[in-house]
Length: 134
Image (cartoon, rainbow, N blue to C red; front, side, top):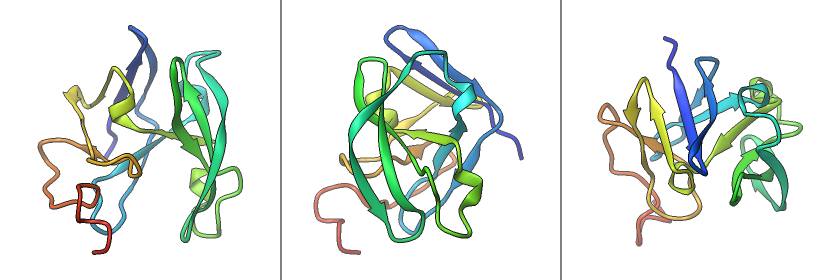
């Protein structure tokens, strides 16, 4: 099933593609990874910080236009996640708007997770206060 994803930031379309990898993790809405080539030229800039996912490996961060550290990628994903190589995920709450097949996305609560919630996605989800340890 192909899904068309759009991302708008700073008053303009910065990414649009149907070439997405949709990743699901326990108690999370999906995260969409877009090819780096789907982003407008010059919109992605290196940002400080790295985190580690026990499944996917070491994440590095990017700014998307004026949204500092609002995107991440895995330069060398762990075995089993090679499909994420050269793909970028964004925090939808840091963007002007994100859509999936034309439907506006609601961002997952909290500032750590980057899930994309649409009408077809039902919680509960991690991210809200008190949900860290489930």
